[in-house]
Image (tube, rainbow, N blue to C red):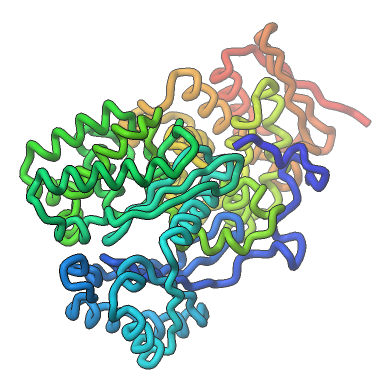
Length: 515
């Protein structure tokens, strides 16, 4: 994120124009999207902030619609039966949740099968849903747009793997560039003749052809699709990585190579049980591993990132106006959370103004985290006071938030933990603290304790009642109180102020501003 919202002509103090300020950019109405894939059929109902939609409902069924397609040219009869049953259920759920009419997208299996058009008509006739069967280039474009929904500044190559196909798409300058499709989905690969040698040759030839149609060498490879997520989950397991959120999980080529060797050397069922992966999904992992190994060797990306956003999110991004696309998905999601859950909506903006003098040298990347923390600081007030700090940490590290690297999740979590608790010693979250370096941990603690102190002025606006002045070279923190706020600076407030000063390693001074 580049923090560009701070510099736009429509900027609204430090936050940019509010998402809910007009009818053209209000909160997202409930929208339902069905994805009929070669392996699974899924319904997602979105709700919440338009720029960073929340998952109101999410259900899938592993139908295997494309199983045997490469051999027979037709959809799996059992897969059709199960998919039709799921779609009938989804149609009823969509109506009950106020998300009808559902948008339905069908991909490789439906477009490639000779009985695909017939099955599409059957779906329309028996469910009332109208599938939109897209070609491979459109599938690649929508998947790449889904990545842009979570990473507005994404640059590199998006690789989306489904059951019957795999697509590549370039991302450059916030736009989708060249793209291509291939039959490299694991369900299709099951039917490739020639044993392991024939399969390896087929994969190598397809990847070379697919990659030759692109212009760029990726600094980053974005992985979209269930098989990739299953492999990433195995990478997390092998490494003992403490945060199991897959979205924005990063891997190096070296780490991935070690994980692929580990997968190939171990019993796949034992690995499935360790990670809680479904039988259907895990059965595709050995074939997906072969594809990914060859793809990474060919493209040589500097970094590999996992995206939980794909076609469904790409459909939403498609309809966003340019000004909405330009907004920060993290800040917009936090603003929505404050508006819907905080006791004092709007207080987060004033709190941000109050704590910002402590971070005078912070760049756009750090400022957006400070904004997010201030917006979220009061959204878990309904939790029991003894556990509020834990709920805050869990929310920051596990919530569906876009535009947020894993270390940034932990930074938010630690700052919100200290918003409600002075010490983090003995916390059950200690393994996650390793994702922050000592300076990041110090700054997260300072932010949390500054918010904890600023909340003492919640009867009004902290930036109107008090002012913090930080002099790093002099190692001094001054508090200037408005005369109206003198009584608010009681014993508890003073203790919190001193705790903040200790975290900063400074001396303190307090004076009252008389009018």
